[in-house]
Image (cartoon, rainbow, N blue to C red; front, side):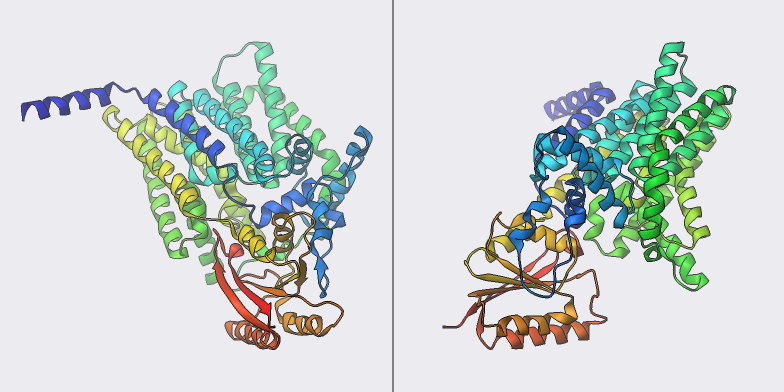
Length: 560
């Protein structure tokens, strides 16, 4: 009994001797390691392949498939960089990249230009394409450390860096070929520069360097993701309160950022505003429905960003909302705790924390209310990703100000929960849907894929994952047109197919059936049509990490 007691005491003593800094540095190292381990673990999802198309500068060469079979191999070159005979060709290809961007994409150009410059170094395999964002995510973790250190101290920097590095929401977007990870990079670097200038004594040369970083971060942030401007507005409020004596230096930073962004604001932004569809963000018609939608969006974005991350794409909405309620109560408790603790002894620090933690979120919510739109939780929280560093900054401030006996248990609980969600996400949620489709389709030399969707994310993923030069043909139509188009193709005696792979998307994206009854009718018509000359030989329900990855794969072979 005494030996067990002594062992327990030794373990307790060892635990107490482990410094929080060591735990935090280990957490940051693990955050970097799991990014490297999982960078190529999943195939591209819908939006990632669109990013690849835009980044190769070949968006203008893509057109929706007609209602007749096409050779998938004809589309293959669109997901590769065009051939270049020299540096001049490489530079000239930037023009079609920008032209493809202003046609339909609602995002600014910097992310796609960065990928365009990166692809010649890494190629277009998943690991290569994602490697740029992986590196930028490490830069964002460094920026988070800088923010925390400038506002608090070295330990505060480590806490914020560890929280951001293991946060499931940011971890997912670190391995995602979209502009959301670079947005966090510029947000944290801009925050680091502003807080360093406001809170630290600096020499004149050092101050000039931080002004330059702030200017470049604001420019790059807005040219990566327009809504990140809301974060920089919050930073401006902090500057006006904390360092208004140097207002003209910060004004020059803002003017410099504006000048750097003017070419795109003059040429690209007006075209995007003319072409982009903003009606998809419109709110419900009645006042009660609108209020409910805004409240739901607030709960969703907090639950997703602070707790469940990408798990939200697989969880029932009720679970996500429940997590949002937990998150909002936790944040309310944190704000109350910090208010009681800091309002007398450190009011300036309290104001900075509350502005950076709350104002970007409130600005986005307010803009939604005033514009009659609902963008806050759009895309499973990614539209508001710029608010994440501020939210985690509030959590960091809370942890720093906890009693000493509570700091380590609370930190360990959060970090272990985050790590468990990340590992469980990658280990337990498969996304190899189109590789399975490719394996099935290439089993025969004469195969037709009949798909009830023209959505370019579906079509281009087929192109990407089928072997280059494949002989497989694709008939992609809107759902209601599939039976008629398939009948015409099968009746045509010029080409016969030994195998038909009927690929039914759960979410066709464009012109989806109005109700389940219409879906059932289309399915019955296709089955009846195929049963004339073909027999079913296999069926698979393919499920990825989101509804856009759900397909019913039905294989038919010609009867002898």
